[in-house]
Length: 213
Image (tube, rainbow, N blue to C red; front, side, top):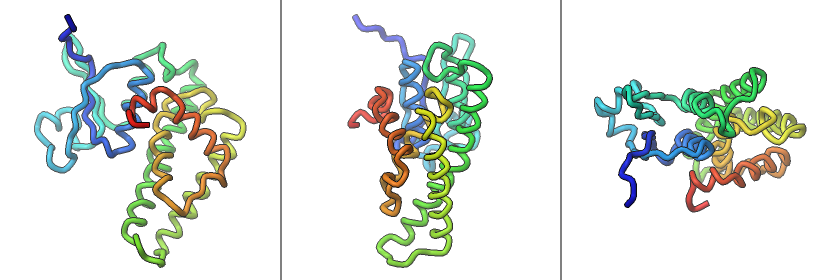
């Protein structure tokens, strides 16, 4: 007879969000089962959800403990929590130096590359079908190319951002997938970034996050 015990985690998510996909990947890396709860970020701001994510942002992760619920919101915080919570997982920090490196890159990906990609894709959508690029779009693309160049040089000397696989790479995985939506970016110009992306896509956790991958 199958156990009726509920998974110890509930993930409140919007599947189209790369930040939610990153948490799915992290949970798979930790070998953790969870209950997915799809949330419309506009329509589903219920009091119960806002208790778990005060600003109504996704993702939010809830651990169901005997002492009560533990809620964590914002993807960098969730990733950090999982790395500390599951010390034997590939996400755990081996020492203070690796932790510092992973958190530094995680911060850049969240507020740097992540925000920039969102701006680029929004601007690209506004000018879809037009031969004209806005001045803002040109500036965004120049900055994106600069960031990819920095990443490419950094990855020329290591397999992953912090040396070993870390939560920074977990967040990078779905962000790199967004580059497929930008015809202006040819990743062959950044061979080390391209190889890194293939390594990330080759991990079993990627297939757990994207069952059709």
